[in-house]
Amino acid sequence: MKVLGIESSCDETGVAVYDTALGGARGLVAQAVYSQIELHAQYGGVVPELASRDHVRKTLPLVHQTLDEAGIAPGEIGGVAYTAGPGLVGALLVGAGVARSLAWALDVPAIGVHHMEGHLLAPLMQDEDPPEPPFVALLVSGGHTQLVHVEAIGRYRLLGETLDDAAGEAFDKTAKLMGLPYPGGPQLAALAQQGTPGRFRFARPMTDRPGLDFSFSGLKTQVLLAWRDSDQSDTTRADIARGFEDAVVDTLAIKCERALEAAGCDTLIVAGGVGANRRLREKLQAMAGKRGGRVAFPPPALCTDNGAMIAFAGALRLQAGQRQGLEIGVAPRWDMATLPAV
Ligand code: KG4
Ligand code: ZN
Image (tube, rainbow, N blue to C red; front, side):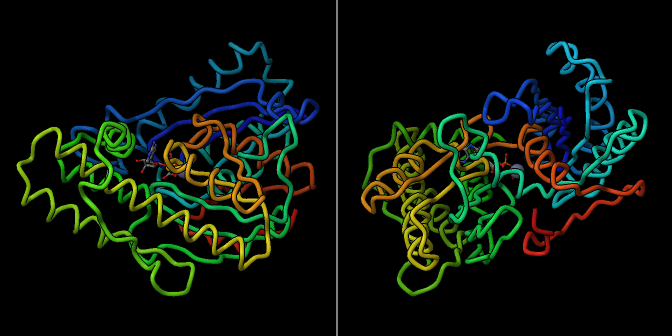
């Protein structure tokens, strides 16, 4: 079955086709992402109403273009998956409306996908030896920082999460306060590559006590104070970026190791935009290697929001016979633990 996936939960319109007959990474037969970054840059963050309007403009042309480039006729599509939540309600409704209507017109089933389940399953789209549950998943995006025990696909137990800012949000806010343009996370990470390690040392929040929750907002304040009291030169900005990145990466790695211990697992999978961070990838590889375990990441392009992960997660649920009714409903807030098993 070829499943069309549509992602529209925030500021990226993502479209992809996943072919279950091919499976693995090969199953991803078409994909395109349109980013609204330029649209929101002048406001310093995502403006929800503008995001919705842009999804309205871009979704169908992107579906058309994606199918066209891959040489797939609409009649070959056997199911349509869309992000039903969590995310911005207006943005979600656009993708859901387009996807549900397309499925009806094509007379194929539709399925609403949980955005974080999409992220979580993305590392499983591999040809060689894809990880299999049980494993621990670190979900690190702009809106979420969660450690999840994946007992089986569709059975998710939350082990810990952030009490305030998400890791990606902390990257973005820290970048902003040092004058980097939106979205600052990837730029801050690039800057950190040039920074001197150790010149600025920030706390590893909540690692000095047991537990698997995170807190990143205090770190942002520490950076603010360091930046304010500094010479604010380019070198200092890079050194602070390095200190900040090291603090976040160390904190995530410490909690991941604890989560693996707590869940009795050897395999860690990492997903979400911050999963594209090079230093995080290296640190977690080293940690997993030391334990004799394994860590799996999606390719960096599948870490940030995309249609492929929605097509893939939707395909698994459609294959299990799950279906969405004709009513177009979305869930801006949605607990992954309430998902049905696959
Ligand atoms: O998963 P995602 O594309 O969107 C959400 O669902 O939130 O994640 C976006 C987040 C942003 O906060 C962005 O700054 C962060 O991921 N991000 C990074 C990197 N690439 C993206 N953070 C650190 N290092 C990176 N290389
Ligand atoms: Zn996301």
